[in-house]
Image 1 (cartoon, rainbow, N blue to C red):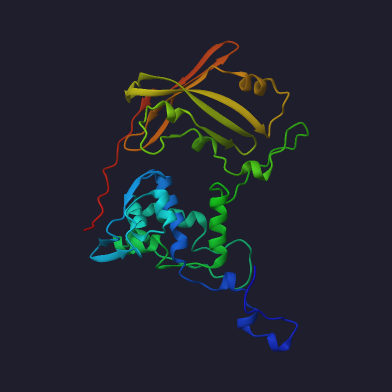
Image 2 (cartoon, rainbow, N blue to C red):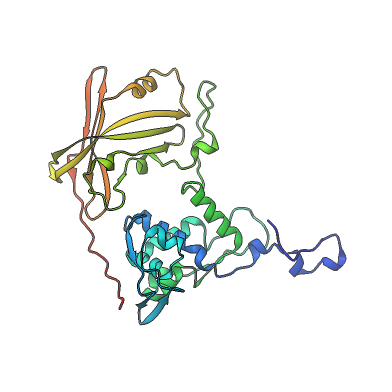
Length: 328
């Protein structure tokens, strides 16, 4: 970390507080638009938008709680990606108004805003994050693009490092697994851009694609379960009707599943070889009401003793009522 102006503590003339403090962690400021990607990341994570969701920023301003949110010019019709590219205040406001305020609060907390880091450096300021859930819509919008919140440079750097690291701030394994010389080591690079097993099992319908479209199946995910790193690759097989004993009755998107071990496994293990060779594993995905997420309803795996099947007997979801922003 670099702090300017700086001083040499060995020089008597430089032993002034303003020269010796580390401004990257002691000085707070309103970050402004550099916070927009985190607000939009929260909306993406909440499932209220996708990168391609259209956002109309015309005519370059929006009335929120009787106050104006403005852009430097009228950017017109954008998508979520374009909102970030043009740093649109109006677009950011419209996006965050689609989600619950607690989602943004949770994102800030997860990234470390309003908290001291673990570097234990004297004089570190933790910053200020107000209770977003109590804000009116105007303050909520301005908070999402970096006003009404204070941070230090280290917190900003840490938050962007989390984005670059695939959304992982830190990971730990408790208890630590025993060291096995035959197990392929997992590198730090392989842990990046990897999901946990639960998140990796979710299927996200991109853009405005139909939920049962074959393209929704044609995807994959890297997964790290704390010990093994592997890829799950999907491909379209068919659409069929499924019925739970309680709840869901409707179409399911059936995808072929291919298991590709990457690291953290013992190559000679028969179960690893067996799973990697399988071409008949299937997962039937069904949608969560009111979202663009699909989750596993049934999974079938060939085994040496026959076909194994795991299927939900109860699947009940309810769409939350849409949140209507109070705008003019």
